[in-house]
Image (cartoon, rainbow, N blue to C red; front, side, top):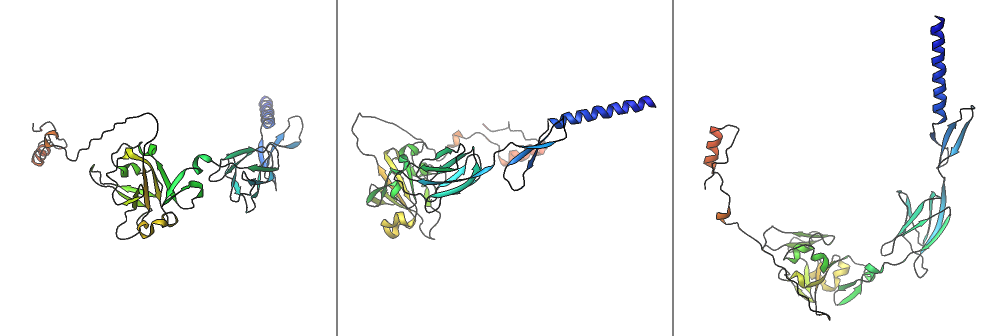
Length: 312
């Protein structure tokens, strides 16, 4: 009886020793009351003291201002903490404030400007200057009888270049436009010779919903005969402000097509060909069972159908 009691005491001491060892290497994350940081509770094996050590940096209030290249305040700029869903926007004077860890990275973005990432590195005030994206804003848009830069247009306009159209091999310009412009729906019956229909932002009336087509400044109702290789650019005017120059004819939107013109340089030749089949000849159809032959096979072999009794 005495030996079993001693063995039990040794087992208890061994268990207590292992528990102390595990607790000495175990960290319990506990949120500090009133703070947005965290701490670790550490139990030291050589004493009974319990200490808290900060392992995450507390959030700090970051303030700043966003301006353009001319030093003008930019309202509505989006500021977001990288790899986080927390963010804010600038006010009417271009100023902002956000709480973020001192070692985080702020991402500044605005339509028409280059996105910038700024590491804080412990700073509490960040003032930056956004640069314009020249690649998109200097694109020339044809609107009515004039041409404007994309950054000066307030209407809804989609631009499709000739390079984008050539990525879809089709002899029909309408089929090539499908999926290339937002808010533009192209539907077709699948027949190679059938005419596709274009709808800009849905149906506008119970009658004719076709948009107005402008080819090199001339209004037309059919663009299916235009060679896609002759198109240099295509613009889609989708709202009233962009298509107001054309009046009531533009109630369903406007599709403006600019064809290619002669350029200086060496001569180049490109050849493309397309073949479409409307109806498959009967001699090319594979031999198949008639309804009567199919019923006879079902009667003779229930659950099985022999497909080798085809007529030749």
